[in-house]
Length: 317
Length: 149
Image (cartoon, rainbow over the protein chains, first blue to last red):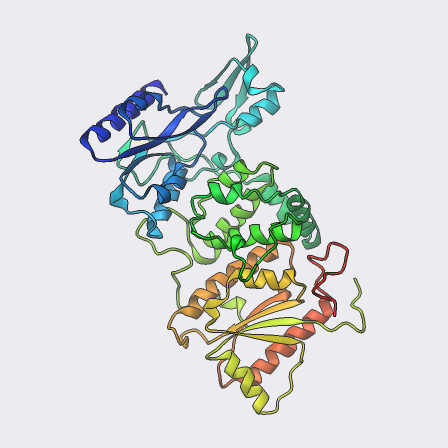
């Protein structure tokens, strides 16, 4: 990790010195122990704050549409897919961004560790990541966990740990991990329809409509979102479960083919709605119905603008 | 829940201006009879139908939503209906995955000369929805303000 961080700092410095980019988008240590937070800077002396570690969770591609080019961005495999999807949608010019690819072997979910250890992240002394296990040191005592227990859910079946689209790769290639079926999704699929609806109704009763899911989503780049339209007012701004559900389902369908299943919406959700169960289904559907995988090929036409003459006819009477 | 005897379904139909709307018109002018349960909204193209329209109709308490447009290859705007097809397929599958009865959300291709087919589609859909009963997805145990007369 240390040498990766050093390499990143060097590359970033070179890019700024050459004037190839105006800004670097990366990670710096966060205010809480172990956490990281996005760093957007054009100052060379601030580059020393850059880090790469197994806690760099944010999908930084969300900043690209706002920054309008001339940036170098740190991207894990999943983030690179979001960038590709932005390129497909003409939101980002490939020539305007320098992608600093990070091969990633999974991001550690601190809340899972907190849950397993039963201690707050501030009370943990150290977390070390080895090939297949993670060791947590608490009060001099070492505890080992398998990776599948402490990584983010979306890292478990990661299809693209090493970015396919990059300019500079920092570190060695990582092989994709074997796909693991998300437990929640399987559970949902086995429920009868009424129960599924009740499940979502209950989940969305908790939604406070903070729109964190939308704001953190790289695929949600509309200048004006339908939820804020007043003429017509599509849905009430008050957090009734009906409107919450309407908002989220519509949002999920709107980002079909752009959603790369990075899991940011679920991570950002302050009330813990399992949004990935919904995005995962959308992602699988795009594959099943239209053989489409979001963010894999920058020259491919986006899902909702492309079409085949013969497809999906069974939906039409 | 048992469908109430005095209950009549309300279905909203998004019909494309160039084909299905003209088809519905033809059904009328040729004095063919179809259930009056369908409320028709004319859209410029089936490609205009945002998934939001479908969801909002269900949210407002409509018992079903029909999306209808030109046959593939006949779109006035060349490709609008192909795009509508992808979007509709995804919308319907997602709603089905969430527990919405798929019969409530239907689509068909009806050309301007297919007055008869329009009658068949609407009749068939209303029958299916009558069997399903009222849309209580968003009711929360109380009556939806918009469904009350």
